[in-house]
Amino acid sequence: MTERSEHPAQDAARDLQAILQLPKGVEPPPQLLDAFWGYEAALMADDVERLGAYFADGPDVMRGDSGGLLVGRANIDRFRTGRGGAPARTVTEIQVRPITETHAYVTSVNVADAGGRGLVTQLWERSGDERETPGGWVITAAHVSAPAPALDTRIWRVLGSPLVPATADGPLSGATVAVKDVFAVPGYRVGAGVPAYLAESPVEHEPADAVAALLSAGASVRGIAQTDQFAYSIAGKNGAYGTPPNPAAPGTIPGGSSSGPATAVASGHASLGLGTDTAGSIRVPASYQGLWGLRPTHDAVSLAGALPLAPSYDTPGWLARDGATLRAAAAASLAPGTQRMLASDRAVVAAALFEAADADVRGGLADVIDGLAAHGVFASLEPVSMPGPAELFRIFRYTQSAEAARSWQGWVEAHPDALAPDVAERFAWAASVTEAEEEEALEAKQAAREKIDAALGDAILLLPSTSSAAPPLDASPERLQKVREATLGITAVAGITGRPALSVPLLELDGGPVGLSLVGPHGSDLALIDVALGWVDALR
Picture 1 (cartoon, one colour):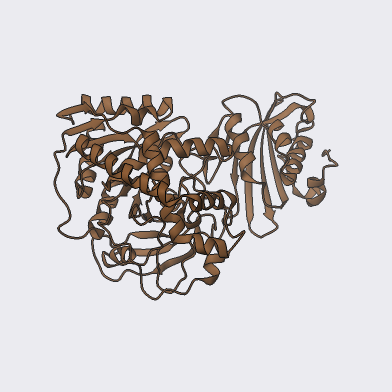
Picture 2 (tube, rainbow, N blue to C red):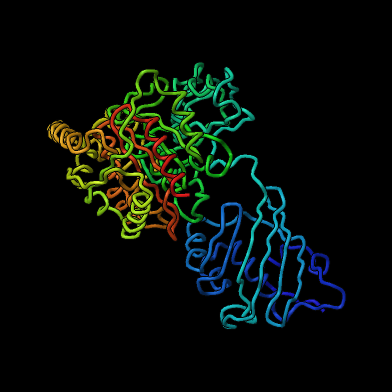
């Protein structure tokens, strides 16, 4: 005899006799189906507390989907809190295979209200508290295959196959590009992550220079990828379109503002991401998602056809899963005659920049650098003294904010409520910066630049790409602000000096990847990538 439940999720399903499948002569373990339907009901109600009760406690429980694998109850709970519920669905088939009296394997098929079929596989164990779940049944492992969306609007605004073809054969032939939604793509509007701006934006007829360079090198545009609103964030969240997933660390933020291109590349949707970097918008998502990312020498790549944020800091940049592809994109885009060699065996570190990072990042990157030294890649590795990250952040914040206000404050004031609260607050603060405050910060910026240039010379500065691994999706605003300030105090070195900065995925922590950044002299963009490729080979 089959058990029935009064749960709403079961009531919405087809007749249980029709959808339940068991080997001949086998009955489901007592109360297992009650637990199954209880979990479905909690899922449809987005009852986070009840959903947590249906998963086993401890560090070994697992949940996987197309976004990656989560291990440990705490990580699963964190993911669920930040997800915002599951799409409505109806269970159409249940296959139960009892393993022992206390273990059972359950696979169910569901049809989403929006269309498409999904598949859920669960390993249930009778080890929980019967006061929490029917029979004490809890899930110890689960895999979810959701219906594939035609277009994941968290990642893409427009997608094609290709959206724009290559204009010539070249070193990037066959490569596909995810273009951040701040660049002109012919035949499409620029949206900047803001629906109200997109609605007023004209259709572009010519590609931005940075897009044209990749097209002429043989790459095609796969699509236009999402960005934080007006590129004014490094978190990767977008209140209008949603937060792109982080395939390298499921349940965490992707990093921004080049979040869409980064996730597209990390997910295998595109070979290259074309983004911008003002405060760290290439290096931060590269660090969080285990990618290679280059912020080139300031003014070395044209920004014609791209929306501004803070022009004295803005630059295009690229993201790739490997250094060779990144180098090909950079070589196709950098103006001839702008590149120089460097003494690849000279490296320096500034202790204050590492102190701004979390302890696990400091320790992990110190081990990476020690490993490189053990392989003899440095002829010299020396400490240097330079302005601290708190002062660099202050300088950057005032000077960047003043420029951002000049770029967009008129539009922001004319479109109240068009921006997400965090971006709106940032623009409001930017509008409050006085001329005197900006002037003082500009003088401090010049002094800091001179000190940094004197300290670094032609050496490569090694520093964390970010102050931490990617924060969880449900991180508090206070935690995100703390990470933002610490990270910007590190990334500001390249912004203030205009030097190129390369993030290389050399560290994997429990919370996700973290990049090691190399900052070189002006014009050493390609040489930095060559050096890093040699270092990676040495570590293999």
